[in-house]
Amino acid sequence: MKLVVRLDRVLSDRNLTQKELAKMTGLRPASISELYNNQRKSINREHIEKIAEALSITEISELMELKEGGQ
Image (tube, rainbow, N blue to C red; front, side, top):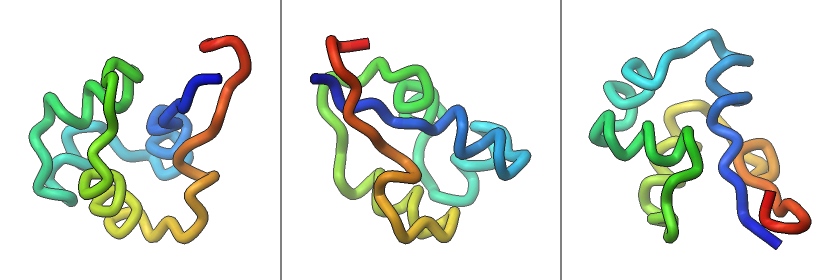
């Protein structure tokens, strides 16, 4: 199993760019990019909380999901 951040889908649904999200959250654009591309080996809970708050996400399943087989 692999935990996948669905930032691509979330941003697309809201017509936002990674750069706009970085400004909204105060996170570095590089951090947003790594999450967007699922290149992080560990996920900072504070980053996820800032993203969820900025995008008014109340259900974690909207932002993250478990995938079979590490895909």
